[in-house]
Image (tube, rainbow, N blue to C red):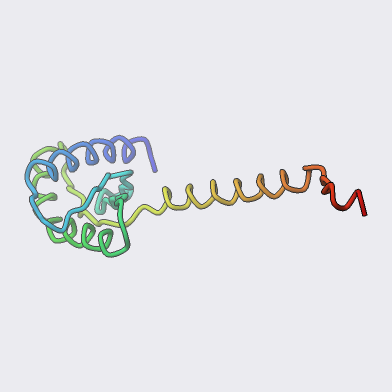
Length: 130
């Protein structure tokens, strides 16, 4: 991303977060966070990555609900942004958090295995007597 699209992505993230909280009351919305926005160089699309806490059904419902309101969000952006082109808003699940949890889990498993190997083996009292 260029500096311009990066700045625009931050503005879009701030505007959409406030708009969704104030204007959209959809029961399908779960506990969500707009984690990042990627704006294409020609400003035609803004891919909104969203993190949703919950199971796969809650994630899908939240993304579906936001996608259904995407045109309203684009209209809001047209008023808020000072650009000739207003990007079309697309929603996608951000899997970075889940990926981070998985990496942390794997590192812990490796650490636990290394600790298990490095512990000295202690003999039982019964084995010493026999």
